[in-house]
Image (cartoon, rainbow, N blue to C red; front, side):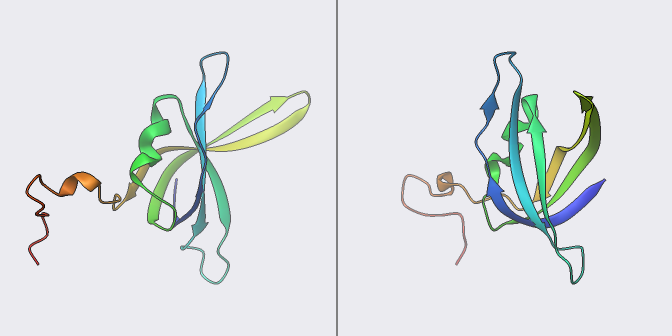
Length: 105
């Protein structure tokens, strides 16, 4: 599944005693017409760094799986992102040592 939207929040990576890591982020959907939604996704394990090249305010497409589980007779649903598409934030390394950037104008 996939959803398009603008990033409105990016949380820090959470490390658990078991060695498990996860990172959450939220997008405001742009593909829901007149009724945009704020949707929280999570990145787990080696995918937690996928969001590093993006920042709040950028538009992205999130590819994700829906995961469900039961714990103490309560049911939970997680949206686990596995791929992010969008234009990455330009890095500061785009300027060379001579002070010239890669932009031709």
